[in-house]
Image (cartoon, rainbow, N blue to C red; front, side, top):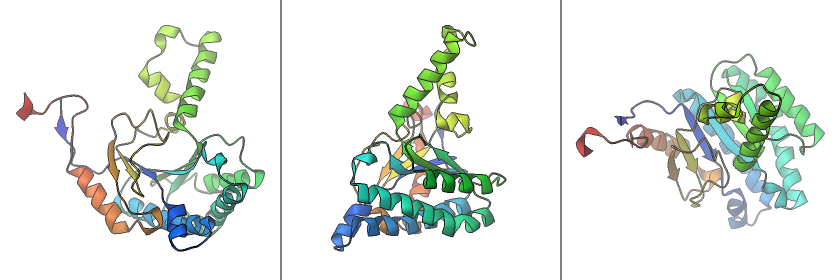
Amino acid sequence: MASKERSMPKHVGLIMDGNGRWAKARMLPRVMGHNAGTKTLKRIALKASDMGITNLTVYAFSTENWKRSEEEVSGIFKLLVKFVNSELQELKDKNVHVNILGDRDKLPDYVCESLDKLVGETSHCDGMNFNIALNYGGRAELVRSVKAICEDVKAGRIDADDIDEELISSHLYTGEKNIPDADLIIRTSGEERLSNFLVWQASYSELMFTDTLWPDFSNEEFEDMIFRYMGRERRFGGRNEEDK
């Protein structure tokens, strides 16, 4: 049965797009755009926490981003480590719990060490889950889930007939950390696609797009999108009473 959704979204996903174009418009190196983007990331994450959103997932680095120049990739990772070192205390003060979603195997050791510090020192926090999708791809996540289920079938731990949507979900990065499917996904910079972000978890997500480049994305625009979401009717394939 369809119902009016009037509550705060439990899980918001952010595709933070436009750092490079922001820098190009100012004739700056691309890494300066990413640097400006990290400041917006902190601001929006804290705003989401203050609003009572329980899960915020940000698309920080995709499995496709390795195609970028070595200089840009290295710059992104260095900024991530800088972000951890400079913002860790405030995240703890705000009771924010950090999760990392994605394949760590290709990440540099110094990045993994920084991430371990970030996750470890916020593990006791029970406020908003701040989920950083790093070396993440939705299709790769599904492949990983299927392989894990196949191993369980092969080992006799489950039967093939036991495979259903709930089981697949439980083997995703989000399922392993009890993160619900995304209620709302926001993408900045004018592009209107998911780009391999939360492919399974976005099946019934509300989608919102803005022409604003990520470094210019304001707390007010974010708040407006949350309130617009709260006014939307979510049917999940059903009908409302007026349509029957």
